[in-house]
Image 1: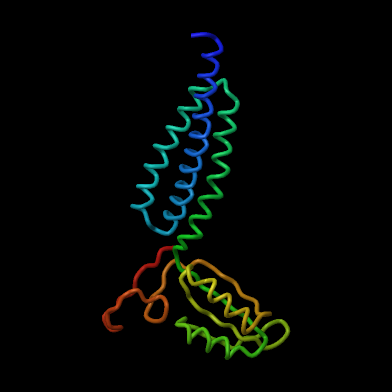
Image 2 (image 1 turned 180 degrees about the vertical axis):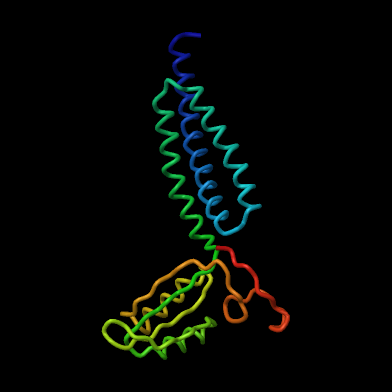
Length: 197
């Protein structure tokens, strides 16, 4: 085999290895991001399965880099896949939308229509008169699934566009009504359950 043929074979092999390293890193970092999120939400068994897959794919990727230790392009593919994997992992987590949130809404304006709209859409809403820095306010609390958050924010902006609101994760909730109910059993037979954070 001539030197030119050897060089062409080497070049072809490298251009097949580099995308493989890049894609492998995207996959393993994406899995790692999801694993950490699932772990913080108490989903330990799923996190363990993802951890196994993450480690296996990482070993495959790093072994290819070590086999081409003198090729700087392999390092770029490895690092680029890592950076891209973080973005993909967060995007996947947002699409899955696991967990439960508490939305706190504080408004200085009339908010009975907002409370009524939240309840009409199946969200439990508690309103409490309070005192703010500049006078009386109304504090509204509601607990929602993450997948329903956009709907709640849309209602807030429609009925009270200038309202101040905060959103936080919920570790535990005793779901007995509204959008949090997942069981079809009668209310008296339902028991509190631990929500994934």
